[in-house]
Length: 270
Image 1 (cartoon, rainbow, N blue to C red):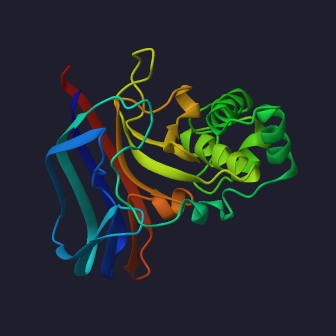
Image 2: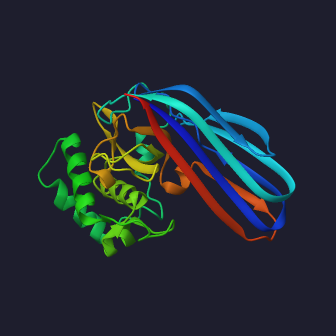
């Protein structure tokens, strides 16, 4: 499937800022399931800095904007050819050991309820792939998808306690469950063209990857009860949403910030 992406992120400040610095993880991952046809990232009025691939194989690029800054606009446009690999991340080059993804973070803190859910879902399963699928299904059942039900700072434990959340919460909860059973897991940011039933979906999306011995990293999307397929574009990964964020930055000054995001994803060829 060939997917076209138009993604615009705008930061506006009610008082001019002295400068702004951005670290962008907005580049499609390189693996067997996707091939970049064209891709461009630009920051209006900004200066492109250095770029590198981190230990997880994700490209990171720095930008800076000199003040006075009243707004920062980041534009992404491109086309990606995607294929269904049943969620398996084949051909992706990285140097970080999967064991690094057993580390707990605030967002993925393993509460007693998280651990109970994981152990109940895993049951007597000894096969890693089976356990991962069971965990994903359990999280989907335990947390109803409800846009606006949580915030960017909601933890996996909090989302599970209230029984509703968004894709970020599903990913955090699945990661916490997997790690509680000794399965390395990580957060993935990217785009999704449509839901499995064909209904439109919020294009900016997130899911989780779990390390299964003998297979490798496998993606699971509890929010849509599936593994990533040709409708997904994978960008970057991290221990949680904060670490895998497509855009991280800082503005120097005292002005209040307002954020606006527009993402359009279109399939141009089947």
